[in-house]
Amino acid sequence: MATIDFPTEIKSLRATLDTIASVSDPEALRATIADLSEKASAPDLWDDPESGQKVTSALSAAQGELDRVKELGQRIDDVETLVEMGQEMEDPDTLTEAESEIATIRGDLDRLEVRTLLAGEYDAREAVVTIRAGAGGVDAADFAEMLLRMYLRWAERHGYPTTVLDTSYAEEAGLKSATFEVKAPYAFGHLSVEAGTHRLVRISPFDNQGRRQTSFAAVEVIPLIEQTDSVEIPESEIKVDVFRSSGPGGQSVNTTDSAVRMTHIPTGIVVSMQNEKSQIQNRAAALRVLQSRLLLVRQEEENAKKKALAGDIKASWGDQMRSYVLHPYQMVKDLRTEHEVGNTSGVFDGDIDGFIEAGIRWRRAQQG
Image 1: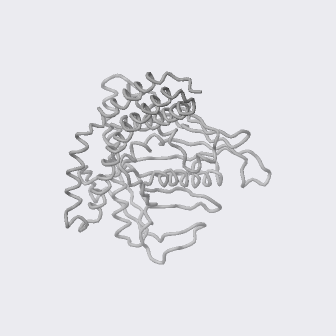
Image 2 (image 1 turned 135 degrees about the horizontal axis):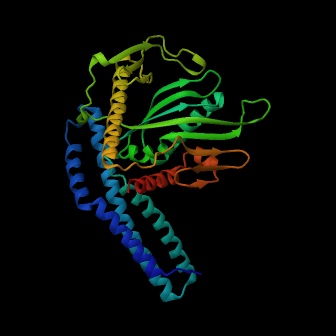
Image 3 (image 1 turned 60 degrees about the horizontal axis):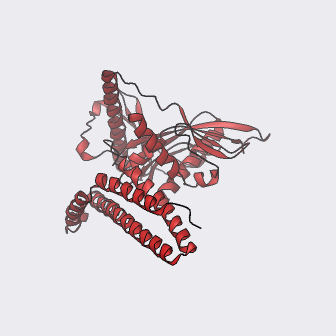
């Protein structure tokens, strides 16, 4: 039997949707969709495949956002009708169904509301993610590979295209590091809260004595550079090395020196690319990621200056932001937000939306 106050719940749902709509601005979205639709119908759209992809992706994202707002409004109307029917017929099953649908709508509204919190300068960008094995030897390298799969599965769940740009394999198992792109609007805004040090506690599968091992991996997330950003890097500040791509265990997978390692001399930032078969393509990809990292460095420096001038130093994110415990119990817990789940296999299979949403809300609270 339903036990909730239906009028109050439905009124609350409408108020939340109104708040979301005021931020999303449906009229502005319609104007954006009209403009992008005109560009998408241009006969020369795909003369520049990269530009064509950006236009169609932006159009799909804008249309999807508008559709979600409209659909939720319709669902609230429908559930209100369902409640009226159940009450008129005095049918407890119908009212229970309505209660369940209200809970589902509430969850969908909460997820859409998180999107309205992504108002940072680069939040709407695509993302470049780098994962590096930290302390913990072969277990850390294996953990880095587990995290790579976790994020790729998360992107797959959402239908976000990804491209693995570089992988550096460890000798025994796992990865020393990996870099990949997530090509979807607001990928940076969502994944930026994943940046930091991740910790894994488990019985090591690589220890013949079956001892518990703690290992670490670092996740870096940067916004993908765009042509309008104008991050110019003088050639004199760049050192470029070429080498042969390699596979697991150091096995050569390329007979030519197509892989590129690019070093920004003033900052010491190093970017490696070996995804493409062409050295020219790898060099272009490496330069794009290097520019993206320098863009983020510039933003961080500007933010630091603003905080210093304001005299308002916020709490830092800290070195260890999330723990994945597989022994002696099973739990994944974010140490900033206190969000935790017991389904560790689900998390490693890409079910991390709860952590991302909690992280976005936490970050907004920290910003005041």
